[in-house]
Length: 134
Image 1 (cartoon, helix red, strand yellow):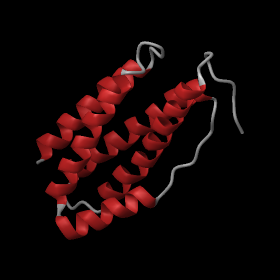
Image 2: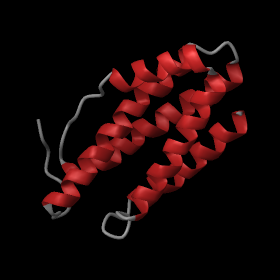
Image 3: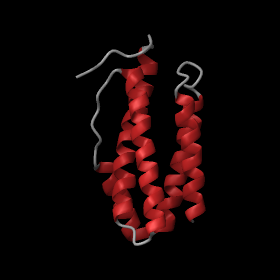
Image 4: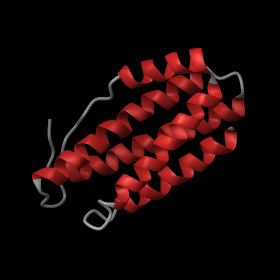
């Protein structure tokens, strides 16, 4: 069920926001699944913290889109396959790069949607956290 978006937005902006919202929801599953596979409690805690942040981000975006979306598992399946075949360092680097790219994409939206500033800053922090674990 859709709720009312908080602002008047163009179709293009709404499409961008929905894509971002879906990405944030899918990231929750990615980070949770990866955390479950960890033997290191410090890494597990960081991944769970990032998963929680991604859920908050999806909530912020939902206020703008007015759409209730569901997370998909396909991205997490690919990440887990990569983890098992290419290793943790590869996956952490890939995820860190994804967080950096997301932060850059959010810079294009923050002028029209001020609450996205928090998401943008968090994504940069996530990239740093992931890179630190390398």
